[in-house]
Image 1: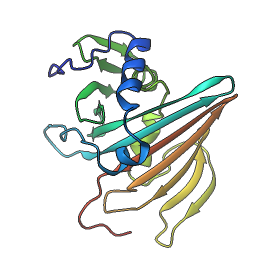
Image 2 (image 1 turned 180 degrees about the horizontal axis):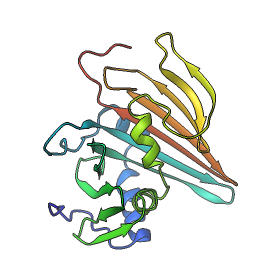
Image 3 (image 1 turned 90 degrees about the vertical axis):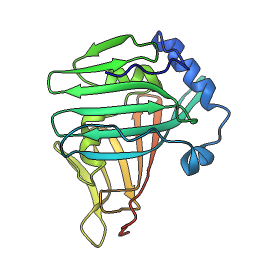
Image 4 (image 1 turned 90 degrees about the horizontal axis):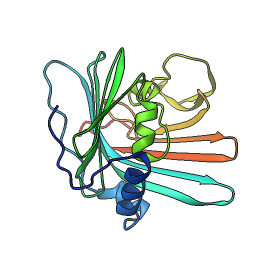
Length: 208
């Protein structure tokens, strides 16, 4: 795996989270979603589902100051191997996650690595909130994926517009040929509220 330039060294969950939050704090949410730098597409052989875009994660909990983190990402999924690069708003890669059927590996900005059975916990170390990586493999392509789905609403072309799955409430809009160009996710874990926005770089042959 290529060494990440250690512009932001993520050496522990709390340190990496504070530094990423601090780097993002100088940028407003709209500026990030509208035009921050995105990572390069992830190189690889063979066919794969690929997207790049921006993310914004907001976490609120009674008695604590709200936390917000924004940045950019690159996604490459061959079906068996998923690669996810997370970057700060300037486009500098902060962490890389590789997901295989038997493990997920996080490479920190300093070159150190950590391994887990799934990617959600590793993403939480970087962003401060877990994201449903397994389900995103379906949602990014405009599919509900496996597992119970409730409150499903579809557009005139039969594509999911809103639904609830695995505790997440979703809205999918701005479709292009690959899938939704904008995803809004919300989840409540007890008193903790998590909101996520993913704004994708859409294709020229957009068919909204």
